[in-house]
Amino acid sequence: MHYTGLIEKYRDRLPVAAGTRPVSLNEGGTPLIELVNLPRLIGKRVRIFAKFEGLNPTGSFKDRGMTMAVTKAVEAGARAIICASTGNTSAAAAAYAARAGIACFVLIPEGKIALGKLAQAMMHGSVVIQIRGNFDDGMRLVQEIAKTMPVSIVNSINPFRLQGQKTIAFEVIEALGDAPDYHALPVGNAGNITAHWIGYSEAVCQNTLACALCEGRCGHHRTKIATRRPIMLGYQAAGAAPLLRGRPVENPETVATAIRIGNPVSWQQAVAAQRESGGWFGECADEEILRVQKLLAQAEGIFCEPASAASVAGLIQDLNAGRVKEGSTIACTLTGHGLKDPDTAIAQCEAPVTVAAERGAIERVIRENLNI
Ligand SMILES: *Cc1c(COP(=O)(O)O)cnc(C)c1O
Image (cartoon, rainbow, N blue to C red; front, side, top):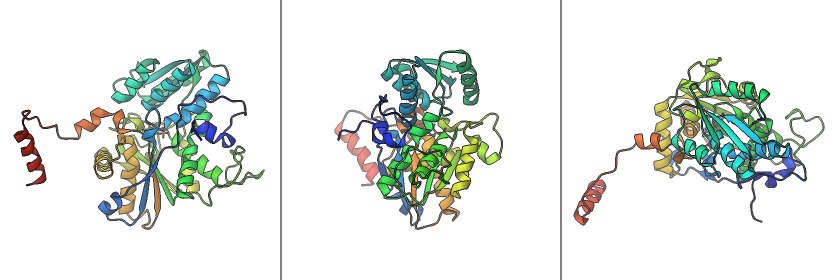
C-alpha cells in the first residue's frame, strides 16, 4: 500500500474522526538506523539506533505534530495559524499551511535561526516576523495574540501537536519488536519528550476503562504493542538547561539553536516522563554537541543538526559514567537534518583545497591524504 502519512497509518490511535481529511506530506515512517561504528569507537558493548527524523518532509520531527495541528485547525475552520519558533516549527507550519491553503505567521528570534529553516519559512510563503527577543518572548506573545486575533496556535501547547509526535514511539517499537531499554533525545521546549512518553505509555496500555498507565490520556488506541516502556533520557545544552537548574534560564545560549529555550512550555510533563520512566536529564557543552555531530557525520554517514546530536552526546557521557548499562539497546532521536544549519557545519570543517585544473595537482592531493 502507498504510504500516505502518519494520520492514515495511525488513525485508530489518534484523535481524528472517520471523515477527517488529513493535511499531509507523507511525514513519519523515518528509518531507525543502527549505529554500526560508534559503539566500537567509544569502546562500549551496546546497540544504538538512530531514529533519523531529519528525513521528514521539511527535515525535522516537527512535521509529525504539524500534520495533526493543521488538519485539526482546518477541520475547525481556521484560516490562519501562528507559532513562535526556533526555526523548525516555522518551517513545518509554513509548509503545511501552504498545503492547506491557509495563512501562516511565524515569530522567530532575530538573527538566531539557522539559515535553512529561515529559507523554508520564507519560501513556503509564510509571514516571517523577526522579534528582537528570544523564543520564550515569542511564545509568550503568541499566546497573547491568539486571544485577540483570528489565528490558531500550532506550538506544542496545541495538544494535537503532541498527539502527532507520539507516533515516533510506535514506529520505534515496530522496528525493534518492543520498546528499547533507553530512549535518548534533546529537550528544548520539552514537547517532544512528553510526546514520546505518551506514545510509549499508550503502546503498553490495553485500553481498559481505568488505565493506570496513561490515566485516561489514551482512548484512541486498540491493542497493546509493547511489553514495557523505556527509561527516558533528556539532554539539554549547558547554556540552556532550565530542567537541570530547576528554574527558568533568563538568557539561554547555545550553538544548538533548536534547543535554545529557557522556559519550556511542557516542563511539568517532561519531569513526569523522566520520573515515571526512571530516567534523568543531563546537559552537554556546546563543544561536545559539535564534536558528536561531526562524529555521526564522519563515522556513521548521518548528518543531523547540532541540537539532534545532543541525544548521542549525552548518551556517550552517561555510558562513560556507567549510568547507562552496557548490553543495553538504546534509541536516540535525531530530531533534524544537518542541512538545516550549513553555517555551523562549514565553520567546523577545514576549507576545501583549491588547486589548478590539472591532473598532477589533484594526484598530489590524493597522495598527501592517503600518505603514499
Ligand atoms: C524542536 C526541536 C527540538 C526540541 O524539541 P522540544 O519538543 O522543543 O523539546 C530539538 N531538536 C530539533 C532539531 C528541533 O527542531
